[in-house]
Image (cartoon, rainbow, N blue to C red; front, side, top):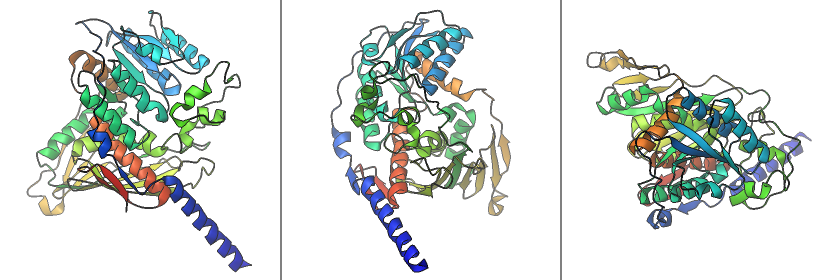
Length: 437
């Protein structure tokens, strides 16, 4: 009996792995045709005069999108920027109405127009910037259409759902430098990362050989289950479900998918794209090690067995200029890894607002331990919002630009593939191709 049970267990696990590999898709992909393709020409940018109020719109005012609405309106009320949210677009009537009310509560007096179809926003010639806070499977299309309409874009993370989409968006941005795109990775404005980048470039820790970071939290009721279900949702009446599905094609109505899409692998990369990008983006910025060239990921469903995406992930990422990054993520335990950049001569600790350098024992006579104090900027997400508005005015390239977003998406996409098929994935940034190892 025990033997038969073991055999059945083995066969079940083998079938599951085989099925996962089949679902993961092809074992080799080329993106050269994307990077060589000529992108469409965008419309001229809407002129913004010196001192003029920036007029922005929000596509997808759900949980995060409505939070953005409240924050931008609050920043304007506080006198930190001249900005008005003049339009919102969402396939759900109640979410649009809620966003309009939230903007008013935050103190904005300018009227907000409301649309079901986001394309009506892009047809307007009075909007300077568009914030994209739709589900991941819509990011590429929404951001691309906004750029081509001559609007600057703030695109929530992850920049896209898949790497090929990120590269297409990159082509559009590069072909149209008169418009700009910033990815909404929250920690990019923390001064410590700029200091770390400067110190590493100056050789303060010698050759940076390995780094580690994590984003871990504990959600006993299941991650993303805190997004509530509204019994009043009625597809075809007050919600356009087919439009929400969009690039994925028509799907059966499922309020769980609609409200908690991050739990499902078809619509999201889960922890990797939603949480870990916040940690990896500034770390990659500071290290400046180029494209990832090999990614391995492992983990599983250890507590939240109902969620389709994994509740625990561990990534190992190798880079083209010679560096290895270790990244952990969890939704069932809040004890993460210490943020450390290891160098041959010293180690750089990034767990506080400051940069702390401690020499290796073999280099204590060459490297002096020190703490580089950095300014406390308060809410770093608000700083990131203000940075985008600053770039709209000055035409500076945002700190979390489309090229940075692409490198991060290479990690996200290949790590996701590795999680599902159990193999490492190699990326060739010169020939623009990826293959399973």
